[in-house]
Length: 535
Ligand code: G4P
Image (cartoon, rainbow, N blue to C red; front, side, top):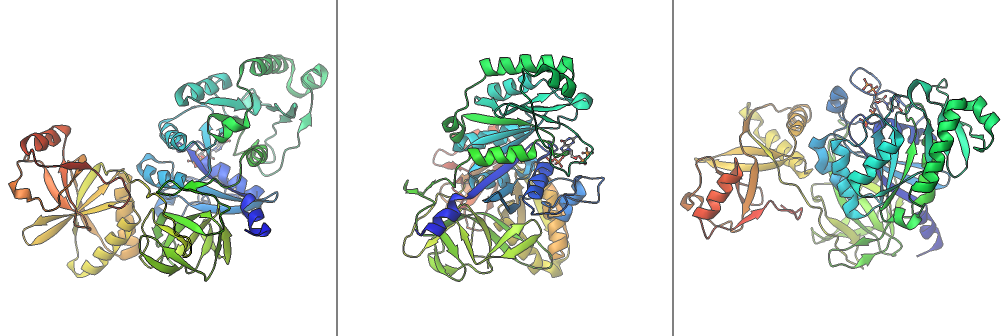
């Protein structure tokens, strides 16, 4: 590999940003982009009441609901680093999307609301990160509001997640009396000042804890005493700073700050960059380690999105480059399609803005035009050195609904829309034979996905439909697709459906019906919903 390419890869950092909704993920992302000069002015408020929306929000529906439905990718430069941020939807109904996004990241930044601590969605996402053993950085946000005791917060992280924490800085009070943070490495106080409205940078005031007079003038005597005690406690009782433990996700560096006020954000970014390494090596499906510095290009698709922008009616496959260098116009090989491909219209994303690119490097996320050939989990690699990455697991749907088209003149659009949206992996489509006719059953993980489907079918394909929720909660695949359903002894509330690949599934309303099916049909083999990503 030539030196130039190696250098480019070494300066890449690709991370996902995760949080429970409302903890401040979008605000933090905006501030990071602001530092990188990627945006000029962050809409520092986002939400239902606001008409300025976070740059990472794509869809109209997201704006209406004030939530991030889809994850987006943003690249920016900072201090010689090339940073790729993967934004993730915070809402639990879209956790599968988040899960896939985390597969494409080398580390994660977890944003926590200082008043709330760990919330359900943080817990869930953390588990995914922990499974991959990627470094996890914690940003405890909203110190300008009343917050929980910082020791309590750290204790909760350690107890619930079973990891160590290392506070990089320490808050001096919170809410209306919030004075700033003490930087443990610099041994300096960064005083909080919110009148610049979060737009300015904050100059640290160096002050040793033994300089009582200066400290008293800065934060007052009471807070000075408290700070000194707490710092002593921390130095004595907390985990040692250990880069190796950080690299393996066993120790999380913790920063306290206020994203909205731009307080602690740049220190966080600088510390993060210093503590994270270049893109991680990946394992192929057969267990071979693929180094990012391998000459041969390889990448996997972790996300597909159609009609991101109404002006471009298109489908974009997002790939994480795992090794080598991508070059526009070069011919690569699509493992699952078993054929050479040219990746056309390669681009990098900045929320709604897209920039065409000529090259990209391991660690980068690129979007390419997808004429309908890619599926999530697919590998694209150099023709000369074929490699396949393991597919991305999929989750079983937990909610099902019958969908019936209203306008039979729009059959084609209906079929096309359903097929395209299903290919993105957010919903699953099944068919239920009904006489000579087939009914469409949609399966989703979270009910908000129904709203997304309805909204997108109408706005992108001009199709409206009737929607009726079904009582099923479980889905199991029948191992042998040739089984005759009518010959099976099933409870009356069990239903059989088929997917586009022709696989047959049973839908159950409860565990009891599953047990019945197993006990009354000894030769019936039921499989868990396909977790290979190839269903
Ligand atoms: P999310 O992406 O994690 O869902 O959170 P987001 O950044 O949208 O932030 C959620 C709310 O918290 C926003 O309020 C935002 O302005 C606010 N926020 C973010 N960081 C801070 C902080 O450091 N301090 C304070 N005080 N607030 C912060 P909103 O949507 O504009 O309005 P509302 O939800 O408060 O009504």
